[in-house]
Length: 108
Image 1 (cartoon, helix red, strand yellow):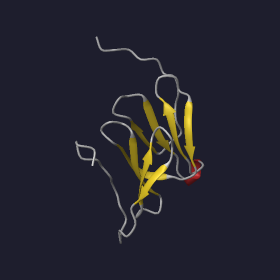
Image 2 (cartoon, one colour; image 1 turned 135 degrees about the horizontal axis):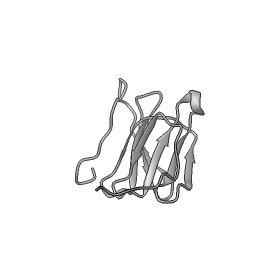
Image 3 (cartoon, one colour; image 1 turned 45 degrees about the vertical axis):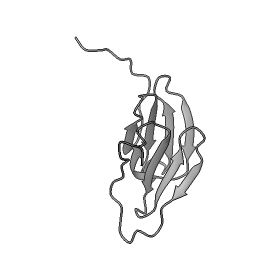
Image 4 (tube, one colour; image 1 turned 135 degrees about the vertical axis):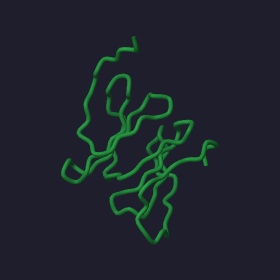
């Protein structure tokens, strides 16, 4: 029989992602659900951070220290520090919508 887990929280989100080490949950709710993006402790269900922006696609770095996401306007990927919530970099200049993001296995 597989592992059993206790449900500690549900998220009203249109997008979600689990960090590679299973310790954090990224959830983003569209404009109809408040238009925010949140980061949660996966073990306790505690809210760690709220970003006043909706993300339409997201990726965690392989080591779980960074998040890359594209906002609802779709052409400016942003790189964030998971521990501090600080914006590291905004990638500007893409002429079209970015529909997905990813990190290479080496974290780049």
